[in-house]
Length: 322
Image 1: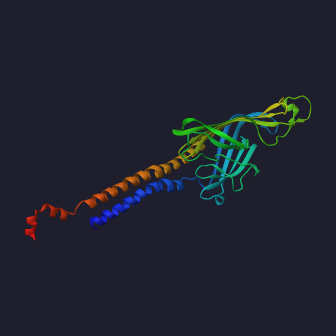
Image 2: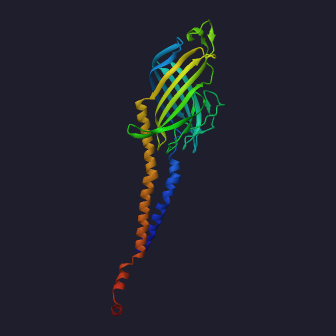
Image 3: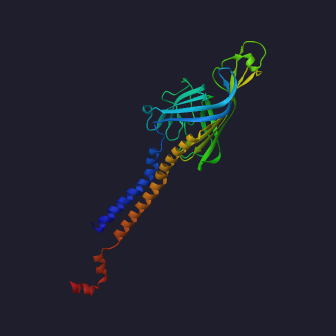
């Protein structure tokens, strides 16, 4: 291959590699870094020595509680921009006696994690509730700011406030806290005998269920993956006149260590992709492309050995040689 052809080839390769830099950061980055359509996972959180209302006696009891969460993706309902997942959360005693259950289906943006209202969404069989905020994750490259969430228990939007930076098993995470003061929980609450609330008289009395919630999330910011959660909730049954009160739930659920480790592994996998597409590929491709272009210019400007010899031979000697 001639020097000129080699220079043209290197120039073309260099220009191609330099063109890939914005492509890898804009198009490929956006196409690869998305939440998956297919999802099937189960996580658990545990509350030790929690106070709860025993269904058998309808009196407060103390014991360990387990909160189990299932996530299942509906692949056929999703597309390039949105994913559709179903979520169910069950709270039970260590013996498996169910105390509470919530289920929902929703769509969300695969890049930002923000809920999209479509695709047959519902919450506890109610299709009229409009859910909003982040769904199951934070956006990629989460920021140190507040984010909107949707509380299943309260059935309304809430705010998770940025609360600082903290390491979880050596990994830097952003801590967000949802602080919800005492609020009425939507839905009907079955009446209870007056004697269970220490009220005089006979018969049952109507009740409202009120909840105070403090929920802390630890999020790996690059991937937007929540890796740990502490769910502190206190529910109280209160009569309309406020005279009768009964603790229905006082618990602090924390993610199990096994599930924390699994979430950190998921976050690490996303971080590797982000590092590859956002830094390694552009920098490496840019350096190689620039090297090819510089080499091509050097080859084009450098004369061939024969031409250099002609310049070095004096004119009279060149004439004699001819």
